[in-house]
Image 1 (tube, rainbow, N blue to C red):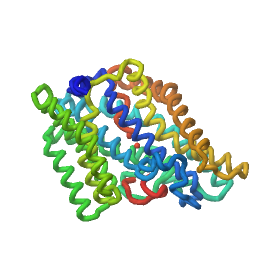
Image 2 (image 1 turned 120 degrees about the vertical axis):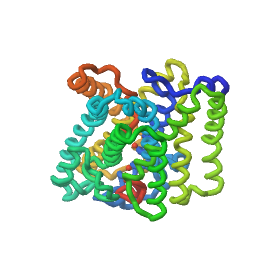
Image 3 (image 1 turned 135 degrees about the horizontal axis):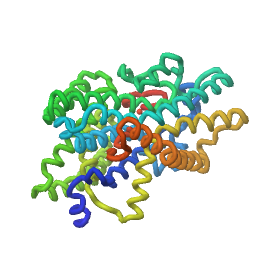
Image 4 (image 1 turned 90 degrees about the vertical axis):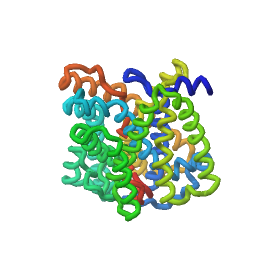
Length: 399
């Protein structure tokens, strides 16, 4: 453990993978898959005959099944940490311009979003033709398609109205935060008080019970940024080792205490807990450490698959539903083999998509608009991130 803490003394440099954060990203993506497994019980936008405890391996993975939507907040916090670590100074000092920043983001997020949007639109058309209604997400009309084209589907801040490939909602909001992030750094400077102000805004919205997934995303993004600012402040100081040990202790003990007290049942408490705990978790796992070359490579591959797994899992679910209903076969969602087959299909598809579609498209766009595919940031602090905030939605939580 001493060696690990020493190696984890600082976040990895721009050319290295943040192995610890890749682990968190992958686990968070898997949590979302568990949570959305309930979609297989849906008829239109409601679950029919769904029994939560009958889902495969429920006693072992109850936390993922019940609270998996929280993976989205983790993704937002990771994004904030990485963006503030990498871009806070370079944007404020005008070393990175708007063109480069937004081309890098566009090339990372848009190609797969556009492809899955078209895929889901076609599959939903088939579903509506055969059954008279859409599957899970109902707002699949021309105005919503136009909003989706511009990744603006959830900029209105509403907690309802998911459309087409529903999980894109969280990425739509994160894109909006990128504009806020860039403009505040460029024109308001790099003061950490901006981060504090965003957190104060979030607390006020919670106190007044104002639901806003935009404020929610902004708060997790900026508290992740605050963790990055703190990490840089103690970089190279005597506090570094103590801070890492404190982070390890909080990361391990805090969930145990929350579980023992039963506090996880309270939605309001969990909101506050996540806002305090996730940045500590991200900081603790942000160290530049290695698990050994083979494991590092495996973790890197797993982390690279998070965005594609997030966007492809619903089209796969929709395809499976179309096939089963066309053959008048009941959905065997309580069968372990069916669950494992679904998970395997998503992960294999995610790997192939990342390798043969995402990366080539990134390189093509960056070469076209930046003159080089090199120098890009870590391949995906977002799931680009991993669901509308946490009020009930089509999937019984955020989808």
